[in-house]
Length: 121
Image (cartoon, rainbow, N blue to C red; front, side, top):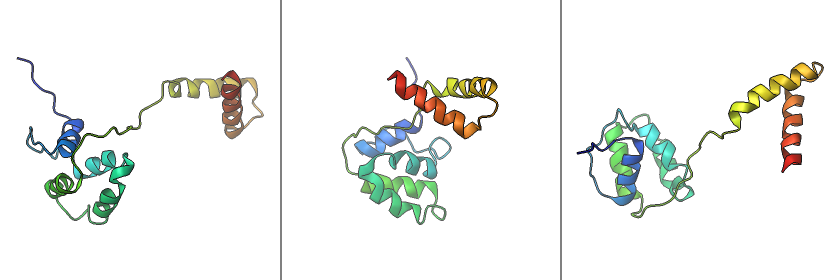
Protein backbone atom coordinates (compact mmCIF):
# COMPACT_ATOMS: atom_id res chain seq x y z
CA UNK A 1 0.00 0.00 0.00
CA UNK A 2 1.25 3.49 -0.86
CA UNK A 3 2.36 5.64 2.08
CA UNK A 4 0.78 9.06 2.41
CA UNK A 5 3.25 11.94 2.15
CA UNK A 6 2.96 14.30 5.11
CA UNK A 7 3.98 17.91 4.40
CA UNK A 8 2.95 21.45 5.26
CA UNK A 9 -0.11 21.20 3.01
CA UNK A 10 -1.36 18.22 5.01
CA UNK A 11 -1.53 20.38 8.12
CA UNK A 12 -3.03 23.37 6.27
CA UNK A 13 -5.77 21.06 4.95
CA UNK A 14 -6.34 19.68 8.45
CA UNK A 15 -6.79 23.21 9.79
CA UNK A 16 -9.28 24.08 7.05
CA UNK A 17 -11.23 20.81 7.25
CA UNK A 18 -11.08 20.47 11.08
CA UNK A 19 -10.11 16.78 10.75
CA UNK A 20 -6.94 15.55 12.35
CA UNK A 21 -5.82 12.69 10.16
CA UNK A 22 -2.14 13.04 11.06
CA UNK A 23 -0.61 13.97 14.41
CA UNK A 24 0.95 17.43 14.41
CA UNK A 25 4.70 17.50 13.80
CA UNK A 26 6.46 20.80 14.44
CA UNK A 27 9.49 19.70 12.39
CA UNK A 28 7.36 19.56 9.24
CA UNK A 29 5.08 22.53 9.89
CA UNK A 30 6.35 24.94 12.49
CA UNK A 31 4.21 27.77 13.78
CA UNK A 32 5.93 30.30 11.55
CA UNK A 33 5.28 28.22 8.43
CA UNK A 34 1.63 27.76 9.34
CA UNK A 35 1.26 31.51 9.76
CA UNK A 36 3.12 32.16 6.53
CA UNK A 37 0.94 29.87 4.43
CA UNK A 38 -2.33 30.90 6.08
CA UNK A 39 -1.52 34.58 5.56
CA UNK A 40 -1.57 34.04 1.81
CA UNK A 41 -5.35 33.86 2.02
CA UNK A 42 -6.95 37.26 2.65
CA UNK A 43 -9.78 35.67 4.66
CA UNK A 44 -7.38 34.57 7.40
CA UNK A 45 -5.31 37.75 7.76
CA UNK A 46 -7.12 38.91 10.90
CA UNK A 47 -6.45 35.61 12.72
CA UNK A 48 -2.85 35.40 11.53
CA UNK A 49 -2.09 38.98 12.56
CA UNK A 50 -3.49 38.28 16.02
CA UNK A 51 -1.16 35.29 16.33
CA UNK A 52 1.90 37.14 14.98
CA UNK A 53 1.99 39.37 18.05
CA UNK A 54 2.68 36.42 20.37
CA UNK A 55 4.08 33.86 17.97
CA UNK A 56 7.66 33.92 19.27
CA UNK A 57 6.53 33.21 22.83
CA UNK A 58 4.09 30.35 22.24
CA UNK A 59 5.02 26.75 21.40
CA UNK A 60 4.23 25.49 17.91
CA UNK A 61 1.58 23.06 19.20
CA UNK A 62 -0.36 25.96 20.72
CA UNK A 63 -0.20 27.92 17.48
CA UNK A 64 -1.52 24.91 15.56
CA UNK A 65 -4.38 24.44 18.07
CA UNK A 66 -5.21 28.15 17.85
CA UNK A 67 -5.54 27.95 14.08
CA UNK A 68 -7.62 24.78 14.40
CA UNK A 69 -10.06 26.68 16.62
CA UNK A 70 -10.32 30.05 14.81
CA UNK A 71 -9.99 29.26 11.09
CA UNK A 72 -13.49 28.60 9.70
CA UNK A 73 -14.21 25.15 8.35
CA UNK A 74 -14.24 24.78 4.62
CA UNK A 75 -11.49 24.42 2.10
CA UNK A 76 -10.40 27.63 0.48
CA UNK A 77 -8.15 28.18 -2.47
CA UNK A 78 -4.99 29.97 -1.45
CA UNK A 79 -2.70 31.13 -4.19
CA UNK A 80 0.69 30.22 -2.81
CA UNK A 81 3.66 32.17 -4.02
CA UNK A 82 5.51 30.22 -6.66
CA UNK A 83 8.59 30.87 -8.67
CA UNK A 84 7.72 32.00 -12.15
CA UNK A 85 9.19 30.00 -15.01
CA UNK A 86 10.68 33.06 -16.67
CA UNK A 87 12.65 34.08 -13.54
CA UNK A 88 15.36 31.55 -14.41
CA UNK A 89 16.03 33.24 -17.73
CA UNK A 90 15.85 36.80 -16.40
CA UNK A 91 19.32 36.76 -14.87
CA UNK A 92 20.85 35.45 -18.10
CA UNK A 93 18.99 38.05 -20.15
CA UNK A 94 20.14 40.86 -17.86
CA UNK A 95 23.75 39.75 -18.24
CA UNK A 96 23.41 39.65 -22.05
CA UNK A 97 21.91 43.13 -22.13
CA UNK A 98 24.69 44.45 -19.93
CA UNK A 99 27.31 42.92 -22.22
CA UNK A 100 25.71 44.55 -25.25
CA UNK A 101 25.30 47.91 -23.51
CA UNK A 102 27.99 48.22 -20.80
CA UNK A 103 27.06 51.85 -20.11
CA UNK A 104 23.64 50.74 -18.78
CA UNK A 105 23.21 50.16 -15.07
CA UNK A 106 21.53 47.00 -13.77
CA UNK A 107 18.42 49.03 -12.94
CA UNK A 108 18.24 50.34 -16.51
CA UNK A 109 18.71 46.82 -17.83
CA UNK A 110 15.75 45.62 -15.75
CA UNK A 111 13.61 48.47 -17.05
CA UNK A 112 14.68 47.69 -20.61
CA UNK A 113 13.85 44.00 -20.13
CA UNK A 114 10.41 44.78 -18.67
CA UNK A 115 9.75 47.10 -21.61
CA UNK A 116 10.66 44.33 -24.07
CA UNK A 117 8.35 41.88 -22.30
CA UNK A 118 5.44 44.36 -22.43
CA UNK A 119 6.02 44.95 -26.15
CA UNK A 120 5.88 41.21 -26.86
CA UNK A 121 2.51 40.90 -25.13
